[in-house]
Image (tube, rainbow, N blue to C red; front, side, top):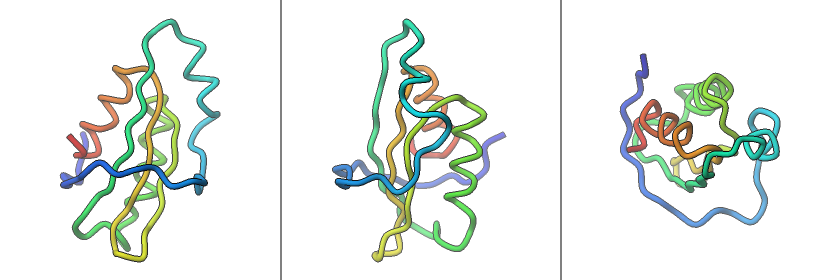
Length: 97
């Protein structure tokens, strides 16, 4: 079950990632499936509700990599990378699509 329905918009990725999730893109690249990378920004009440921790936990479970961070605007930005089907699953679960 995926709680946290959220609205999101795509943004350009920052220059330096804050935290890597899982073991890195190399782990995802070991598959023969096509890879996908998505940048996102989440609006609404996302700071102070463990969104980053939830995102990291879900990424580990699903098997994708990336980063997520709070912004000074009160939003959360991030990037998710991995096999296309797993990235889509992560986006659906997090309410990003």
